[in-house]
Amino acid sequence: MEKIIDEKKQGEALLLNKSDKNKRKLFIESYGCQMNFSDSEVVASIMASEGFNTTNKLEEADLVLVNTCSIRDKAEQTVRKRLEKYNAVKQSHNKNMKVGVLGCMAERLKDKFLEEEKIVDLVVGPDAYKDLPNLIKEVDAGRDAVNVILSRDETYADVSPVRLQSNGVSAFVTITRGCDNMCTFCVVPFTRGRERSRDPQSIIEEIDDLVTKNFKEITLLGQNVDSYLWYGGGLKKDFEKASDMQKATATDFAKLLDMVAIKYPKLRLRFTTSNPQDMTMAVIDVMSKHSNICKYIHLPIQSGSDRILKEMNRQHTREQYMELITNIKKRMPECAISQDIIVGFPTETEQDHKDTLSMMEFVQYEYGFMFAYSERPGTMAARKMEDDVPQEIKKRRLSEIIDLQQKHSGERLEKFIGQTVEILIEKESKRSKEQWSGRTTQNAVAVFPKENYKVGDFVNVKIDSCTSATLIGHAVDYSENN
Ligand code: 5AD
Ligand code: SF4
Image (cartoon, rainbow, N blue to C red):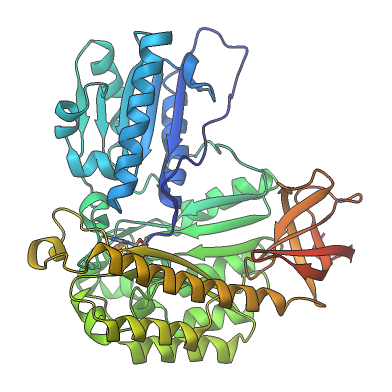
């Protein structure tokens, strides 16, 4: 499962070394989920050892790499528009500029990309980034290059990511890649391959490095983090065949989380994304035991209707999801929960839609990421079901769930008024140069006057008021965490 940031450009790379004029310049940008942003950091690292410095100016790039998203049709259209822009810059600035597509669209379209988009010289799928040095040589020799081979074991555990666009405070650490769930609407299992977990030792080494560099918050990242399982390598589905020794010493997500929380008591820990059927009581216990694990869970529901959940091949019922929520709230009443919801999945009736709304009323989600169903070629839903909910109905249902979510989000924020909460300062507020912006453990954004605090400080902030999405307060003192 992925949390989509947005299908719009989210950032370009930073200039690493302005003085080295002999090196070639790489402009890399990412669309879609956090996994793509994290992968681009791996790619920047691989390209740095090939003599590429990253630049944030498209016009001066020798090589442009775009990390793409296929989750909905709109995401793909956004990338196609971007390719037109690269073409214009190539014509006006540097006729030798090369363009490569990475990520899910590369994997989905493979060499068809070269036919459909003349600007593209290079197509590389999410498991083939280590082959980039060879592929670039091909491109340099004037040939198009494609590698979209999916892997059963690639986790890039041995690549130390270059932190692009980092605020120096929070970073992502990938712990699993791929997804085995086969939700019928989702293209991810086809574009990112089988689920595999990364060696815990290499996870710890990456976190060690981040702590040395003074990072204060890490997010453990995967399509389905709760399904993390390390038993010396190998796919999760082959665990049954593992030796007794491997089974006895295996690390699951609860163990990994516990280990990281104990080893780094001053580091804030987050994780995303959770799948309801894989989230165990052991994970909830570990979360409740450690104050440095943030009390926030992204727990997509997709639909509140049992019939639709079944058609989606989600591995749980409405009842089981509600039970999980009840357990979470029992152990951690303050825990925030967010959702992903799809409206207008094939055959969705008005009653199914009402079931989704009533699920929202039950959970009272703090945040939500809501989408109209977009048929993706090759998925089970596209092959077996007709996209039969009319566009206007999808639109109306989407606006109904968005309205309800906004109401709940607002009510949730208002509850903070009068409370003192711990904020990790991440950056200057967009609205005011005099204010810092950071987040609570529940992932609520808060702004407050800067005073003498600095980015990376943990500050106790008393909340005085809020807008629809932001808490507004003032610092009361330094917290114990400093
Ligand atoms: N149409 C609409 N939304 C989708 N998502 C995944 N596939 C589709 C699709 N075909 C949503 C799901 C998922 C999130 C990352 O994107 O809600 O959890
Ligand atoms: Fe998430 Fe299901 Fe897609 Fe896997 S198949 S990424 S669990 S929506």
